[in-house]
Each structure stands twice: as C-alpha cells, then as structure tokens.
Amino acid sequence: MSTRNLKVGAKAPLVLPAKPGYDKLFYVVDNWDKETKVPTSDPLPLEQRRLPASGEQYPYLCIGDFLEDTLILLKNEINRDNFYTGEVGAALASASRGGCLLPLKPLFFEYFSAKDLITRKMIELDAIGTDIVVKLTIPVRGGKIVYERNYSRYDADDLYTHQSGQYKSYSFELGMLKAKQHTHLCYVSDPSVDARLEAYDTEGHLIPEVYHVTQEVQSIGVSNIVELRDSMQTMRVTLGGVSAYIIPQIDAEPTNPSPAIVYAVDLGTTNTVVAFKDSQMPEFLSWKANDMLRMLTTFNRLLDGKTFIESRLVIPELGGECAFPLRSALRVNTGKEPYQGAFSNSSPDFTYQRISTPPTASFRETDIKWKGVNSKHLQAYVESICKLIAMHAEHRGATSISVFWSYPSSMNSSSLRNLRSVWKSAFEDYIKSNKSFEATELGEENEAVAPYRYYSRTAGVQGHTVAMDIGGGTVDVLLTGFTAKDPMYLTSFRFGGNTLLLSPSNALSTGAGLCVALKDYLGTIAADQNPSAVDSGNDGNATCQRREQGSRRVFLRLGKNDSKLWTAEVYHGEAL
Image 1 (spheres, rainbow, N blue to C red):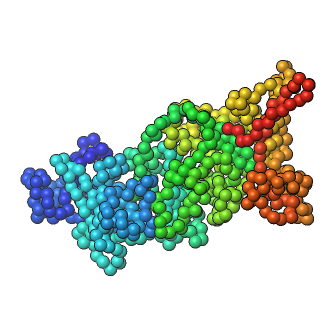
Image 2 (cartoon, rainbow, N blue to C red):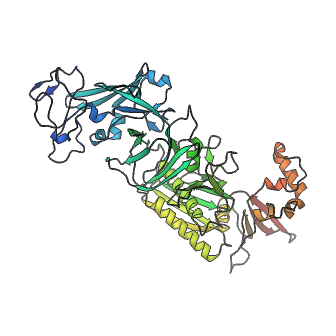
Image 3 (cartoon, rainbow, N blue to C red):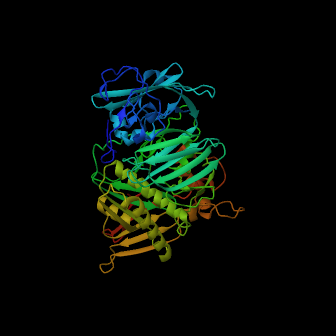
C-alpha cells in the first residue's frame, strides 16, 4: 500500500480483507485463510494492534478504518463538473434520490491523496433497490483489496451488521470561490443540525481559517462564510455528528495560457469597469457559470440557499454570462459581524438593477467610492475586485500580472491617500501574495488621462483635444496640444450625471431641472433606441430616472479649417 505519510522507520500496515475471495493473498507465513475473522474496526492505536489469528503485534487496517458507518445523502444532486462524486453507477445515477458525499475516513488520506482517489478511480457508488452500495479499492503489494459496504435508509431501531451501514438525508449547500492561494467558502445548513467544515491542503494538513463569520437567516438556515489562505484539496463536513468528504475537481491546465496580463479598473460612482489585455485585443473581464463560483449541488430539487450563497459571494452569471461594466454597489449583511476580509460580511452586488429579487438579510450601499473612502465599504469592494482579478488570471495561466486603477482629480488629497492605501493593501493581500504570480505591478492613472491615452493610441487622436469624462459623480476635463510649453491641462469637479438627472430630495418638486427642460428631447431619444421601454406618463422625471447615474466619456478633437473656423470630431463611449 502507499506509504506517502509513513514516518521514517515505521512499519507499513497490512490491509486485511473483509470478505472471502483472497485465498492467494500472502499473510504472515502462509496464504490467507478464509476462516480468519477480521473485525469491522479496531479501537486500538495502529501500532498497538495485533493481527487476527496470528496474535502478532503489527499494524493492520480494516474496513472501519476507511469507510464511515453512516453516509450523508444531500437533497440535491452533486454538481459533477465542480466536485468529485466517485464513480457513480447507472442505477444510482438514474435514481435521482440526491447527492452522496464520500463516506471516507481521515485515515484514508494519510496514505492516499485526492489525486490518487480520482485518477485511480478508487471509490464506486451504486444503488441496489433502496440501498446505496460503496466499493473502495485499496491497492496493495501484488494486488488489491476491495471493501464493500451497503448503506440502508436510516432507521433508529436497526443495528449495524458486519459490513452494513445507514444513510441519512441532510439539507446542506456550499458555494466556493476557489483559487490556489485564497479560497472563499459559503455553506448553508439546517439550523437544527450542528454543521462543521474543515479544509485540508495537498499534504493532508488542516488549513487554518483567516476568518469564520456565522449568520442565522430566517427561512434559509445557518450561513457560514470562511476564507482560507492555502491551497485547498479536500474538505471534511460534519452534520449532526456524521462526517464525509467533499473533493473539488482537479483544475485542468489552460489550453492557451496568457503569461502576462494587464488589468485596468475604473471604479466609478455609478459603474465599475474592469478590462484586461494579454496578447489579444483588450476586452472586458467576464465569466460564465462555474468559472468563478462553484456550487456543490445542481439545485435540481430544492433552490433553498442558491440565491443566498450567490449574494454572499459572486453571482455566477446574468443571462448566460456576467461581464463588466457592472454597477458599483455593495451588499452588506444586516448582522453585527465586523468586516474581516473580502466577502466576510459583504460582497459586490452585481445584480443591482438587473434582477428584482432583493438581497436576503442584507442592504445595499451604492455610493461606495465617495462615502466609503473612510469606511470599510470601499475596502470590501476593492478587495473583492482584486480577488476576482486573481482568480481570472489564475484560470488563464498568467505568471505576470499588472493592475492599474484610476481616480478623479476632484478627489481631495486625504481621500486620495486613503483610496491609494486601500488599493495597495488589497493588491498585496490578494494578488502580490499569490504564489502563482512571479511578477506583479500596481499602478494608478487619472480618470481623464487614461481614456485619452487609449483613444490617442487606437484612434489616432492628437493635437488640439478636449477629453471629457462625464461620470455619475464627477466630470473630468483634459485639454492637450494647445501650447508647446504646457501640453496638458486638467481639471475636475464633483458635478456629474447624478447631480443632473437624479430627483432632488424635495418631495414637492416635479423633477430635476435638467430632466424637466430636456423631457421631450430625452423621450425622443429613448423612443428611437427602444420604443417598448418608453413609459406613457406625464412626469418629466420619468425618462431621466431611466438614465439614473448614467456616465459618458466624450472626446473632442479640435482644429481649424481654411476658413479659420473651429471644427470638431466626437468620440464617445466607455473606454477600455
């Protein structure tokens, strides 16, 4: 048998069969005697055990050292794309009775790794009638030992037989943001059942938790959010005193790795834009289901916990794909838990204004860029963005990563120092400390300068140019090329789309002044773009409300024609 964790000088234990059929197995001084009685389990420590029939003191292992007496059956099927379920037989696969967690004991992983279990196909599960049958194959010198245990539906009055067990059904859901260096977990269990989760690294060592936040939510259950800072390979869950293993699927190596990736982050008052560039053209950061958030089950029967876990971590997709730009909004737990790290008591609310279902047991913060500069809300949002960037870079096989973030000139020096400190700390915690990346770089750029440089590089904008970044909270203006001595003028002020378009706080008002003045014009534009979306109301504020917190970048390239008249070309849109 494998001896990967044997101490120097320790004896390799014998694996003894639990049923006949091993007549050719050599045992002590002769072939195995089928009449030899092997106990289901031995309470003595391994080094103090005595071999059956022989009486000689020598370590040996039996079925009870590898397989649990009780199997955990979840109410939903296991998502096999995300987690290893063992080799499932046709009868069990078609039964649709729920998902079976692997009934392995910790001693198994002292001799074998999760990779051994998966690549050697060591565990099989199937159904015979209402029973669940588990077969575990242990390779030994010269052959193999196969342990088989039947698990019947739980009955408190039944007694266990030599090789039988029982299975119990539990309500348990888990979501995971898995990375090589940082893993975030959110699991939900029935409040009447004590739930505990432990994570182990590739060597089988217990991984300490960076934080563990618990929240009891009515109608959902008990939520636990955990951050781990080491590479996790297995998890052991205990529900009501019954334990089992959860094993994430081994990540495939990227087929077309991107050695170096540059990311740009524009955290606006209204929207957050994250774009990246490797060897291809720049594009917005996006992900599909299972790219970021990996759910334990398929929720084929019960949806309890699904939206809750998504709200606590990251929405897996919106209409098939989740892509930036997304709203700059943070969902914060209603509990009293302090902020302890990314996703601990809050997470980016990328569903804001996209789905009607409100977040459970939480509230939204939308003005996180300005109001959150001196609070934990901005830190929580930026750290979550850095976590997503690190996961995206890992999935693409990057070894070098650069992140550039932008800021408005109108931000005062104190707030800018705080913002710079937040980015530096988040970058070091979630990207620079990641051992997957050999080289990392963090940079910053002014919000007006960054898009100008992009358009000057891609569209040939040069000479007399006015670049205006009209955001939700600020307007940044850049003038270039007007004098040789001062090639660039820059100004910024806290006056943007929100000020122009949002309803004032005065309840007696009929709407923001600009909305009233431009009601007919904006209504015509809306009708041209999407006739079905135009409301037939008399409120001058209605059209503007649909453009709430809108932002736009406008680039004017100025020059003179032969008649000495100014001409202008306009470029507009979200710049990468």
